[in-house]
Image 1 (cartoon, helix red, strand yellow):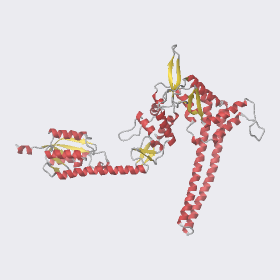
Image 2 (spheres, one colour):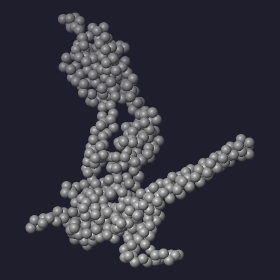
Image 3 (cartoon, helix red, strand yellow):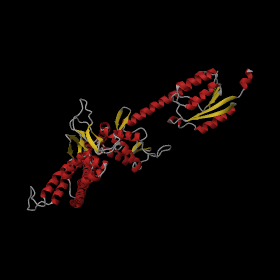
Image 4 (tube, one colour):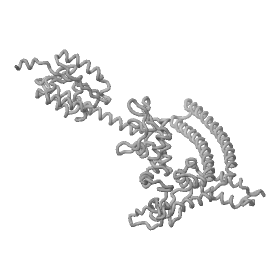
Length: 545
């Protein structure tokens, strides 16, 4: 009876595994493993009753569902032989390796067939144990190498994984580059958040429906809309300001940032401090934008209906002061709108002067461009002279007139001078463009803002308040504002314009008898806006148009 049982054909199962990890990318594919092992099983007189395929790493136990299924079938006696390409296909960790060894010792597994040898229960267990230990050590060394490589990349300022939305992986150069299709959308997300007029859910709706965002297509993923969790991760990710967050550490990155550090920090303040913006289901005009001047907390809005059915919206402090409730009175929304309108009236530019102002601005921009071209020619001449100096310097070195230290010192000085000249030209060009853009948008804003306030909706009114001032607060039912520098300039000039009243008055400082005209006032406004520094601002008037 025992002899008959020994001569029975073994019931074999082929286990083919291919990991997604790099060390397994060079081994035989699943199809090759199955084909070769079927041929070997025929030679070993083992009947293949099933084939199991798995594409998972064996580094950690309890992670492979098909492997666990095979172990259960072995314990039930459904199969008694296992075939695999190598022993490391079965296990790369000591727990799974010990389980296979124990099943073989007990005779539950009567034979393990691999491509290069066969293991029996009566064999010396040391050889099998040694191969399992080597497989385990291999993945440990690989993990250490990967971590070392990741650390080296991070210290060099390079992201060691798949690039976030708005960037792409340059596989050839192993760098992160800007995604031209999605980086502008990420920039818009931060810009809209900076206004304070939009919540992340509102921005998400624009991202997917208005801006047509779809994620980058890859082999198995991509082409999808942005999710709510993704937009929050994006707004909190310092990668977009040029830094890399990996674990608990922040590394300076070498990739090009999409937003500045100041803009990113401001968004974090909005998300962290202005939580009232995100909580209210009913939307109000100025909700989440105004602070209480007394206690510093946000002013919130409340919808009321009196006994006659009339509806009112009141704004009041959120009453969350840690030392007690704030006693500031509430104010009706209509009163706040009137106060904003009064502020806009002070800076209002008559539409009759807008066309003239834009034409004059165009002319000034062209003149400035001509000045920039003249400066560019002068700088080009200086750079050409420096190039000749470098050539003469090389001749002096070759002729032994100067030593190496003197040569490198003078050469570095010339190179540094060239860099400064080029950066000066870039700054001149950018400042000119920003001045023209800032002045044009400011004039349009002060001309049409009152009409937008009257006829616009919730978002328009929020934008107008944010474009008019920064950090508005409320005290004793009165709106207190710190107006932007550009608005202050316009306010002073518009007071002068209203003071003319059709009667020409002389300039305060003049060398001719010519009288002040409205065009003079508008022109001087333009000049003061030009002298202001457009690079230091958060506010972008065109964003509110």
